[in-house]
Amino acid sequence: METELLRLSYSLDTIDTAVRSFWKTAGRYRVFAFSGDMGAGKTTFIHHLCDHLKVHDVVSSPTFALINEYHFAGTGGTDNMIFHMDWYRLRNSEEAFNAGMEDCVDQARTGNAFCLIEWPEKAKELLHAPYLWVSINVTSPTERDMSLTLIS
Ligand SMILES: Nc1ncnc2c1ncn2[C@@H]1O[C@H](COP(=O)(O)OP(=O)(O)O)[C@@H](O)[C@H]1O
Ligand SMILES: [Mg+2]
Image (cartoon, rainbow, N blue to C red; front, side, top):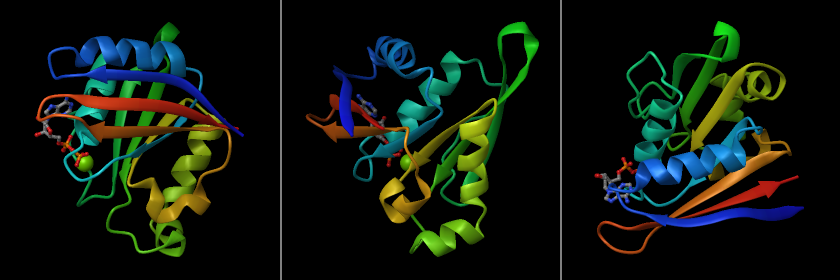
């Protein structure tokens, strides 16, 4: 089932307000699929999502490493993890599986981790409900539309 949870428009000036709405709406889910063209703003938004959680690490595009791992302190000082993945260079689900992507998705579903995935279309078979489909669209050089849909 698909349920739209949030729809918003933002610029780089208002992105942190968008991030707050995002976490408020989506914070109890663990797996996020970011869909959007090259340059739509997937990495940029993920960077701000991570800043909001005060991750200790440098957030950058995982295009070459495929998986970036970040850490942040949860309530009570627990160590929480974020896996930031880019599936752009994968050709199919088998390659994603071999690259360890499924382990990350499984860890996110069962533990203290979030999975933030760019180009999820490349290996959709690895995603299992519930997860959130985040669609980013360019509406002007500075504005983006975002919709958040719960797949359950
Ligand atoms: N509202 C906006 N949100 C995100 N990026 C924006 C916005 N307006 C302009 N940009 C620019 O668009 C580009 C988005 O790049 P990036 O986040 O790497 O895209 P993607 O990861 O989707 O390929 C950046 O150069 C960024 O500065
Ligand atoms: Mg990117």
